[in-house]
Amino acid sequence: MAMQTWARRTLILSHRYLGIAISLMLVVWFASGIVMMYAGGMPRLDPQLRLERLPALDFSQVKLTPSEAAQRLGLGNAAVPTLLMVQERPAHRFPGPRVATIFADDGSQPERLQPAAAAEVARRFAQVSIDAVHFEHQVDEVDQWTLGARRDLPLYRFRIDDGRGTQLYVSPRSAEVVQATTTRTRTHAWIGTIPHWIYFSALRTNQPLWYRVVVWLSALACVLAVLGLVLAFTQFRKSRPFRLASSIPYRGGVRWHYISGALFGVFAFTWAFSGLVSMEPWEWTNASGLEIDRTALTGGRVDLASYPSLDGPALTALVAPRVIKEIGFQRIQAAVPDRRIVERTMLEDYDSYYYSRSGQTVLPVLRIKFDDPMRTWIYIDPRTSSIVAEVHKYSRVERWLYNGLHSLDFAFWYSRRPLWDIGMIVLLLGGLTSSSLGLYLGMRRLVRGVRPPEPQPAHGVN
Image 1 (cartoon, rainbow, N blue to C red):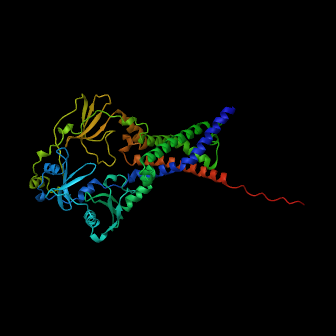
Image 2 (cartoon, rainbow, N blue to C red):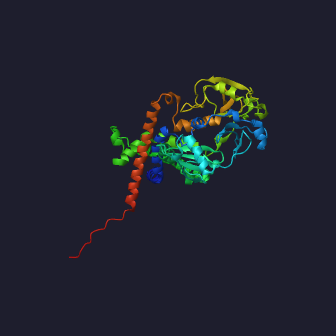
Image 3 (tube, helix red, strand yellow):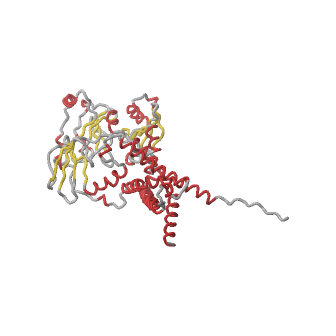
């Protein structure tokens, strides 16, 4: 009996003080999770908006072929450029760790933009007058909104008077806007993504430290939820005759913390655990499936010599009334790896491993399943013969352990909005209620513990 009492006391104290340590983080996670259901991730430059704001290609100025451009830059025939307008001139842009650009009219290379010229780039993108464009400063180190644009540094940041609080980041090397934020997207990030992912720039720039913080907090949240579930069972007192109200040995806030924890504790655990899985702490999901050369289905690498010139009028007539803004170069030819195909299906709708919440992922796609040891599946865009997704047996397990448990994006209700929204909000509010009560109770105990004792009245001597 004494051992049981000691074990129960240890469980209570462990749950109490671990909750005091991390319950604030749980409150933040549940509250920001609701915001992230609708606000998405960090602000980014929408690819479609970028394409819309590009000027139309002027084929009459194009003199340099892709092959000639690559040779002048010393890149050989392996690099594949994109043809677009840069500073109102056609240019070939080659991707890589350091993007290389060469003008297609005379073969010269653009000079690094000065702030005044970059302001014109921002003006054309924002479609405002130059008076509405204000240079703020040069960004030499990543800030909160350029965490994913480290290789583009330095950048010029501009404030745009457009009534939306727009900020644009212009690369002086590529002469292009690489990031765009508004008051709305920044606010959503501050109350959603940033606290949820602990994505503060001061911490996020130290990748190893940020990783350890998120992993340890997630692991401790799992332990806290398990301790709470164990206590929900061990502290339950079955009354005779049975009355639920009499079986819960607590009152006030502790009672409601017990009830909400018992109801939503399993979800709190699976949610914290799936967040931990998303960090891949054991690296088991890093296993690779079938090694498929991304150029295999297009017949090998692009031979730039195959594009001696571009027939601008013919291309323009082909896509009319649309306008050509950007041209990529690709070789298309049927080919498959030397593995037996066990299934091939043309998907007109998403499956459990290839899907998009916003419906932006390309459809239809050809799904091919192979008989390799990792049971690899690939998804192919039939219009371009390009591989758009690849999953193997471990990544399929991770999909359910992370997205399945974290977003609960199961087909039976995920495609029946707002059923999924209602279910997720109820669960998140349940977790928020339990963790908020735990935070309140823990802080109250701490304050009570550090409060100095009240002075006792002095007893005089008669």
